[in-house]
Length: 116
Length: 110
Image 1 (cartoon, each protein chain N blue to C red):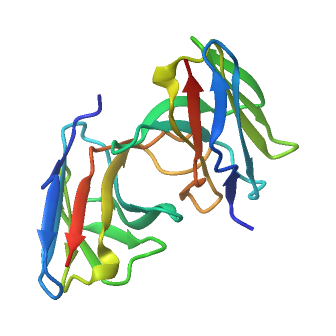
Image 2 (cartoon, chains in turn blue, yellow; image 1 turned 45 degrees about the vertical axis):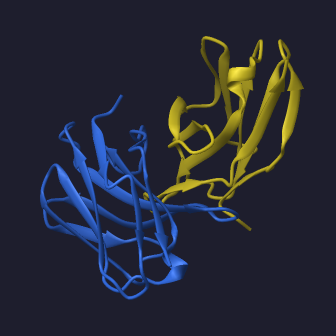
């Protein structure tokens, strides 16, 4: 199994509070990703990183920010959580991004986040 | 049109049968495709990668890619109840983003 640890695994919080989710990898992979998974929408990319301090937006980035100060850590922050951000969040890693012969992404165990 | 499309299912097959899961994609420039298995409440797990036209076999699993028809499939031979899960098809588009289908729920009945 790819060495990916997400924390916390479960969190319940209130609307308007800040929330930070952490993804830690031991594979030294360059690329890291944050997805959310919701019924009827499948997996949707929030943000991704292609190196330390290098990040870019995905398709559902509004309301989220990310930071990557070390190769092994990628943080996802909800500055002011809303009920629409209740979801399961997955971190993924890959050695290389898209293109011919691209490497697959490997997923962490996920964080189940409930915002009341 | 979604970039990667799958039938949501559920697909129900008897134990021992062949399960056939299908996926189509719209970006003709896509080159790399993956099948993930996701058990309820768990994370997606990579089970097959396929990069070129034709078949790729790994144990009971065979992935098939037809770039001319923009079609990817996964065959599971001798299906077992433990294969019951949601199967996600994914492919990198020309922009370098990995696009996932909605997933097909497979149920294998004893």
